[in-house]
Image (cartoon, rainbow, N blue to C red):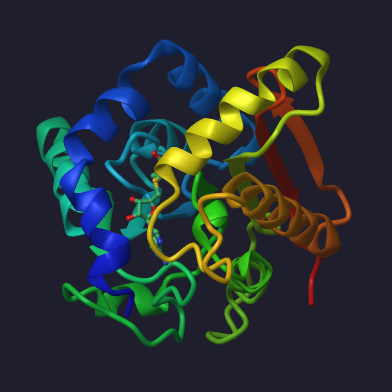
Amino acid sequence: MIGPATTAPYTRHAGLYDRIAADTPLVGGLRRRIVDVLDPGRGDVVVEMGCGTGANLSLLRERAGPGGTVIGLDVSAGMLDRARGRIERAGWRNVHVARADARRPPMPAGTDIDDGIEEFRSLEVDAVLATFLTGTFEDPTSAVDGWCRLVADAGTETKRPRHRRPGRVCIAGLARSTRPLGRLLNPAFAGIVRAVAPAGWDDRGARKRRAVEVLDARALAAHRGIHERCSDATTTREIAGFARVTAGTVDPS
Ligand SMILES: C[S@@+](CC[C@H](N)C(=O)[O-])C[C@H]1O[C@@H](n2cnc3c(N)ncnc32)[C@H](O)[C@@H]1O
């Protein structure tokens, strides 16, 4: 399981994060477009990896409907507390969050399970979403690959016929922009990334200096991973090109 060096900063700043990430109209509009691109259907089982304070949960539930199931996984207790508060205030009975490592999700046969989410093992996942998460992974390719397998394998263990559409995966994250306006702002963006680069960005001791290069490389690897697993994958750029959104339907393995 991930240690406190990774989780503590998120837990400490969960309130501030929530105000910026959930309540600003710019980010709110982006979230709506991201969920549109994921395109979950009514009745779907949707898993959000690294759900944070739960800023995407209402949008996912809107799409999955009362007959669907939405599950958010995160490693930070503080972020999950906020997400749980959202769920309780809204009274959603089909939205759940749990503490788990998104790189080894507990369904259908993962290992790291906290908080009594054993029942998630049997779920057949239709769609996976991860926003602003893959940039924190040293090896985003294997995480994305695991998520693609999760939706590709849905139904194969239980041998039940699946009358559903093939699974979808969507990731969204930040990297330097290649757009004209974005290029002008890249130095400021790099400065912000350097300032907020979390512990664990193991770049052989030079994480602060090269933080934005690390972020760019991880973004490239993560988005490329979706294109490799989904023949219909698309990438769109938002917010002057700083936000990339890639989604696709996972081809059968
Ligand atoms: C930048 S926040 C993004 C939160 C949310 N996806 C959003 O869009 O607001 C990154 C989140 O990923 C979580 N996280 C980091 N590594 C993780 C892992 N291996 N498994 C699950 N969650 C993780 C952090 O605790 C944090 O809540």
